[in-house]
Amino acid sequence: MLTRLVLNQRPADLTPAEREVLRAAITEVREYDAQELVTPAHRPLDSSVLLLEGMMARFVEDRRGDRQQMVAVHVPGDFVDLHGYPLKVLDHEIRTLTPVTAAVVPHRKLNVIQQQHPDLALKLWYLTMLDAAMHRQWIFRIGRLRAPARLAHFLCETNARLSIVGLSDGCQFDLPLTQADLGAICGLSAIYVNRVMRQLREQHLVSFHGYRVQIHDLAGLVRLGEFRADYLYFNEDVGRRVTGVPPL
Amino acid sequence: MLTRLVLNQRPADLTPAEREVLRAAITEVREYDAQELVTPAHRPLDSSVLLLEGMMARFVEDRRGDRQQMVAVHVPGDFVDLHGYPLKVLDHEIRTLTPVTAAVVPHRKLNVIQQQHPDLALKLWYLTMLDAAMHRQWIFRIGRLRAPARLAHFLCETNARLSIVGLSDGCQFDLPLTQADLGAICGLSAIYVNRVMRQLREQHLVSFHGYRVQIHDLAGLVRLGEFRADYLYFNEDVGRRVTGVPPL
DNA sequence: CGACACGTTGAGATATATCAAACGTGGTGG
DNA sequence: CCACCACGTTTGATATATCTCAACGTGTCG
Image (cartoon, rainbow over all chains, first blue to last red; front, side):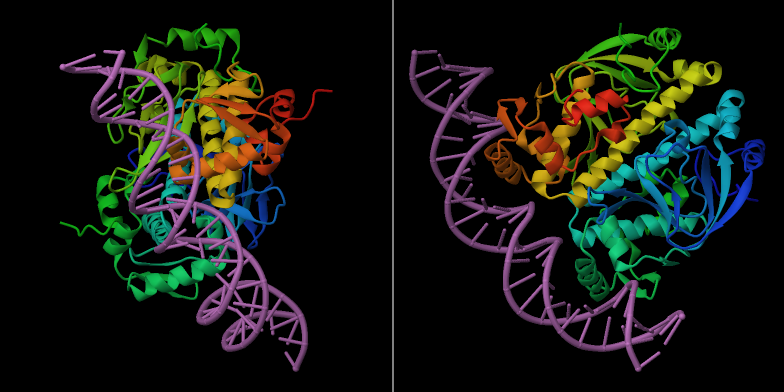
């Protein structure tokens, strides 16, 4: 089912009826190439996209437009630009990182949900608040952590998010990002990302094979990145699992 | 009127009837001292606060709890922890920076709005999306800008936000933050903030007298900080004014 | 085969942090 | 009234993290 992923394993998980309402709001499923612009900045929007397969990201550009800061990475199950529904116009752009399959939900359908399904509407609001919580951790990551910890923190977050949608087995997952991308995420230069990744490898925390990440010491990575899973608002057992606490 | 400030000068400004509904949801007006904890992290909440006078801020703590990253600063008119309504539990704490007057809105009142006033509920959602947009610019500021530009960007944002609530005349405002606070905002050490502030002063961009900021060259500050006001979602004329574009 | 994107390494430049010390300032208690 | 303290600011000297430039390797794809 197309909407099985949304809010999965969170306290505010959707009811079957709500899933059905949301599913019915999808008018189209679209395919995108890698590196394709999905939502431009500063243009009025009339629909939002729900990511089914592949990865997408959001970018804030600086004045010259070359050096971009990534402010969010999206995995399957994310309602990528749901915030475009209340905002109408975005302050950043959204692009695919890989080939993508995504469901389109027109804002007129969301209007109906907002008017007639207040409980579901609240859960959609909640969903956008999860994004905001992740934004705050990105600020913390870049503002307070040194480069190795930044990478570690990002890898922990990504591992956790991929875990609950079945795209990480808890220590191994695909991460289709170049070192330049990781730099745009962590506020580092691509070259320094390279050196820091080597450090992490030499400390036997993670290794990288092509675009595949293998975590060798999750607890160590969590410690280095000062990662706490609580801001992802998973159910408790999930939170424990993704921070390397062994199951009871 | 207590709610006059909310969403003021934005396209989604409240109607008089909506203002009245929101005003009626306030059960109490509370006073706080400076540096007081208003909302702890990781505790269930049952009300949110609307800031009327003074300034507040939100903090994400690192593992040791000493070095904190500020992720948001709040000025009068901000619905500081409205996001606590959908989230129920916060991933960060909220403290006052100055003595504060704030209105308390219980979540049970927000439930009624969510159920019975979908248009107003959407505007409240919108309000939390403005916070998220500011989070994204904080990420950009810390991730892509050098220290002088970070300070400049933050000062531009704060000047703009204070302007629309009448607390800046466009080039002068009170900013009750220590240099250590500015460091916690910009991801810099307090000592370096001091040196960078001197640079800004020597370039005749801004000067500081106690806790009063005077902007001498707004256009220059905007350029240095690569500041664009669009993410604040003001009406157009306001946006032009706060970026130093002279009135026609 | 050449072009191109990405990864890797080295050397050197620069931005920022850290440590230490001195200086104001306002408040507080004697 | 003074002595004192806590707190914030300012400055200098030095350490460190990170960036930039340049070069080279590798795989992929036309």
